[in-house]
Amino acid sequence: MGDIVQASVRVPNGFFAHAKHDLLLARRHLGDTLAPALFFVMACTLVPLGLSPDAQRLSEIASGILWIMILLATLLSVEKIFMLDYEDGSLEQLLIAPQMISIPILGKIFAHWLVIGLPLTLLSPLLGVMLSLPTVAFLPMILSLALGSAYLSLIGAVGAALTVSLGRGGLLLPLLVIPFYMPIVIFGTATVNAAVAGQFWLAPLAIIGAMLCGAMALCPLAVSATLRAMSNA
Amino acid sequence: MTESRGNWQWLYRLGSPRWFYDISGRWLPWLSALTFFLLMTGLVWGLAFAPPDARQGNSFRIIYLHVPASFLALAGYYIMAVAGAAGLVWRVKMAFIIMKSAAPIGAVMTLIALFTGAIWGKPTWGAFWVWDARVTSMLILLFLYIGVLALQRAFHNGDVGYKASAILALVGTVNIPIIYKSVDWWYTLHQPATLKLTSAPSMHIDMLQPLLVMIGGFYVFYVLVLCLFARAEIVCQERSTVWVRRRLEGTP
Image 1: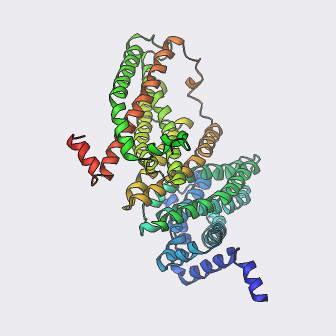
Image 2 (image 1 turned 180 degrees about the vertical axis):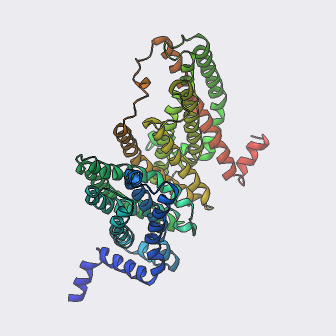
Image 3 (image 1 turned 120 degrees about the vertical axis):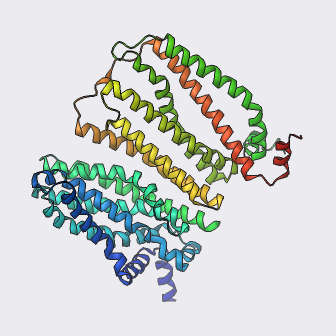
């Protein structure tokens, strides 16, 4: 009896179960998990080579470089959110389950942020030093990247759901998702640049937070509508 | 039966591709005539008879193409999204056909707006391309259209492709105000020194009248092209049915 009660309380949630499942998968596919971080470091190394090693010039554009490279690194990984589950059929199992699937989907997106967004955010101070980012800008950069990368994962999940049944969506996914990433790049770099200029940087950061809240409410709904539309066919 | 749901009868009929094909066939001559009349009137009036601008001279006349195209670029996205939403909610096949037809037209309107803007920008701003807030928003709108078009083409199963692109169009609808506001904010943050022409005094009535005719003409033109695209799509989808074969062979 006790077991049944406990089960019926736990089933509607599913957030942590799916997050844990995806974290385990990420550990089993360690190469795929580490690739975005390595890409981030290597792509940032290209910038001084291609532009100039001059510290003054680099410090002016460091915020933009870090934001753009994190965006690209996330794009590399985002199609994986639903791919493995689609291939082994567990996505189908999720869809026929009786509960609302937005919460498990949010759990999967949270796991993606833990595996991709958070490590990239933690790496960013290192690259900030290498790109001569002024020291006052480090805290705003870390905060804006931490919140912003969660937004990147949420929007990316919609794109991943739209392209998951196409198999290797490959080049299509970035085409769908990049336009929606443009506002967050604007506010992310604005946060860092405001700190560099000695202005009040909490305002653009607050807008990033507001966008994250909106995306947390709406993206799981869009993802579940998409996945249902795909599976009904 | 007609009494009980008489008010909604037209909606259900509109949902049938065959009914739409027949009724739009009757509209086509009128739409074509009206389009031709409005566009010709607007063009001749705007290009030949409207007075030249005090500061920009004759180069301002490109607004008679630029402004209507920009109007329809944005309106077209909403038409596409609303049609997609109607298709998702009521599962009306015709709504998806309208959505699919609206995408390429809107993309071309956006391209026309960008292209005419670039031609106008060269004599006025001194450069074909300027990272102005409205120009950048238009470019992002073009990217949104390209996303919808690319997604439509990627699916071999028509129904799934329709639903996927309808969801993408709806996600875009939520995001368009955010994108526009953020680009505005980004632009004012960077404060370029030039480009004061956007705050020029409002238009003289002699220049405005042909512009209104052109906007009306573009709207009718849009409806006309939308009907043509939708009819082509209907024929393509229902090509194996008897009624399509009869229409194409000309037998009633």
